[in-house]
Image 1 (cartoon, rainbow, N blue to C red):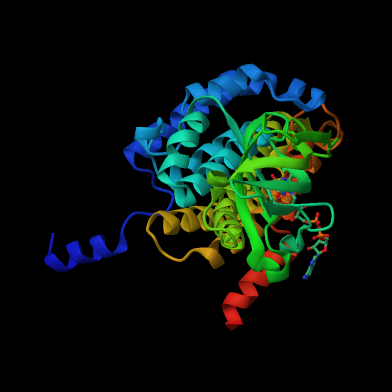
Image 2 (image 1 turned 180 degrees about the vertical axis):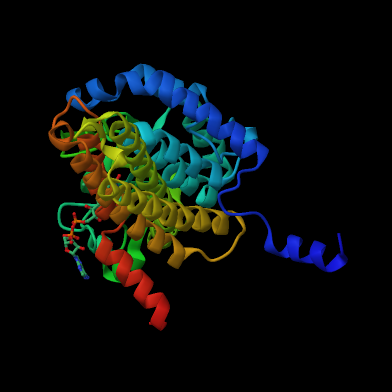
Length: 393
Ligand SMILES: Cc1cc2nc3c(=O)[nH]c(=O)nc-3n(C[C@H](O)[C@H](O)[C@H](O)COP(=O)(O)OP(=O)(O)OC[C@H]3O[C@@H](n4cnc5c(N)ncnc54)[C@H](O)[C@@H]3O)c2cc1C
């Protein structure tokens, strides 16, 4: 090989979708779990709107709840990209378990790894790696897209804060024991008063309210949180007082790539189901995938999925490389949520009447896909971020 060839190879690097040996092994182990343990439970968990506790334990035992957490705290010390692979593989089978693992890794652990004091990391990362589910509580009834308009207040009481308010739409609210929760400690300062706290479920004044009955990701719990003079020790401020806005923006920037992974998992599950079904279903004396009209639909689905996957993988690899990935993460979430919705919708049509009933898996993929355009910033908010970064305002 000539010297110039070597230089080109080194510069061009590997294709985005080529996995290292470690990534391949990791993905294979998650797939084995998803196929063997998760798939048989999906329908019932969706019906009951509840995660099977046995699965939750298995997620911890397999190390899926602390993928990036350093080994000294009991985590796998792995990459952000591997978290993305895990969320994609799980969501290919069940997007509820996908988001369960996603929130733990990309929002909760991430926030504590990034902003926690050594004492907080020692105390909480180990629990989050071994047994405690986490949740991320930013939204309220009156503040979703405009998250910094939150009404939850934290008042300084010397050695502790008293938090009062209500959070809404909190993923993992039923299962979680540790909450990264945002409250305004100085409303006069506007968003510069927002502060992040680590709140434990058993703190006085904390309770879990109503659980939502949802269209999709039904097994993932979504709840209200109620804080009535909730006493939080000062050492549980995460990051600096008044810097919660930064904690939330920066964790959500990364979290969005996780939602992108959830969406490409859903899209893959739907496409794989459609490929299998259209090869079996006979009409007019042949498999329906012998009709060019059906073939073109499948080809469109696969092309869209490929584009979505490249965007999500690229954003994740940019994050691991320490590059600025904010625009790419917003684009990846926007595009992959649209792709998942379209691909799962066409999958229903390719199943015909069978696609419309719960005996087959595709209607669930479609229901589960819808949330991708809503949480961790609606599609309009992703467009706003992309536009701001494009035009520099
Ligand atoms: C199942 C589920 C799980 C969730 N999990 C969590 C969680 O774990 N933690 C958490 O903190 N939150 C969570 N959320 C909340 C979620 O992030 C919010 O629902 C989301 O940010 C949208 O806020 P909203 O519902 O108040 O809608 P709104 O902000 O009221 O938006 C309504 C519509 O107005 C549009 N809109 C608003 N402002 C603008 C604007 N400036 N320009 C253009 N369009 C605009 C939006 O795009 C949307 O279409 C979850 C929500 C759901 C449904």
